[in-house]
Image (cartoon, rainbow, N blue to C red; front, top):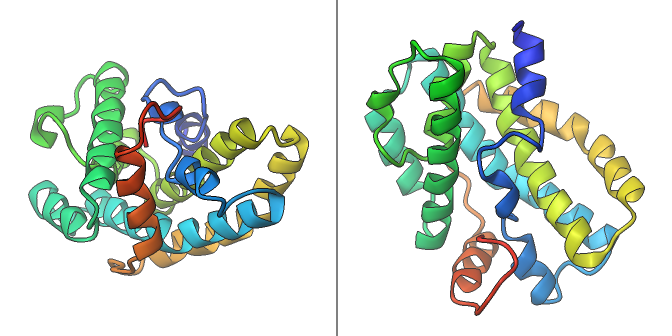
Length: 211
């Protein structure tokens, strides 16, 4: 596959990595009354792109180029993910991505990732192995950070799919800009609200999404 086709495949919501069972905190935001309609969803997605999206993409971009080793990237991601529940969700999605990568790029050194790598670390190794550019690796991470939460909110709030799709197009420029920033240096932004939502969600009985 070409670099662009690989980017499209990795950004596809049908990719069997387990990402569809994670809402990125939006389920808890809906339950808490913070996200109730399209405007509040826009605010949530904007916030998540600018913080968690940027941080995750910056680690992935550094791993892609080799400026950050897998072991170092794992430590850096742990340090940037205060909530234990968010760390667990990241590792679950990283494991799913690695499982798929083993089947697609069979010659990759996937054992180096360990059993449960963070999503950012796995995405960086996958990006390099697949032949994508560093910027495309970062963009795939930022884009799926946005669309995962957007799709979950659509289901939870019974929003018009066309409205949600239009919102993702509206935020696509921000995704591009965030990916560009992620390629420049490691980001260390934190969003206490998203951390609180992640942890609170893990303690809720019978949620629809894992995170």
